[in-house]
Length: 241
Ligand code: GLP
Image (tube, rainbow, N blue to C red):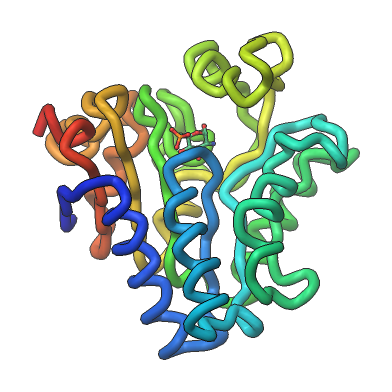
């Protein structure tokens, strides 16, 4: 595990550079996209490099980590729409190149299985962007998640719904109770994991991720078993290391 401590804006550039290098070497790269505020600086930087330096995503395919269950197709906080707004619409992905778990499927169990098959059918994810929750969750794998889990339905914890209420007008009752999320084993199958965390609120989770014992109670600690992980943190998030 490589841990890089740098100012926030620099972290976005570092992650964008890793993605740019991969995409230029291998135009049909498979990316893993994350939602939340942590990857926004990366997406801004990728959009800038697309506009100013001809960085093309025309042959790239991308898979999202997770999705809320039951949010209307046009809901602005539906992760599919968030990803469209933050990155997909700002670069030149081919139609259909970005996929996510279908939180509106009638058969959610089948949708999870189909999603795993879709990822496997393109040979897996080359580089997966990740954020981390204050309780150490990655994607929506909350504390107690099986370290061997694959894409499945999960119930969101009160902590995560409180953390994410800011995206729903501050009203926790508007935050869905359930989600579909790639499992920890799904995420561990990606060839390079790039995790970003900023701010003091993430310090305990980053401490556990880097220095804690591997435990389902801090799901991100499973990354200690991955051969190629880059952890990008600012001073505040690194303050407990
Ligand atoms: C949500 C997402 C996670 C993300 C986390 C942290 O729960 N499902 O993928 O890592 O939020 O979000 P932020 O980066 O906004 O702190």
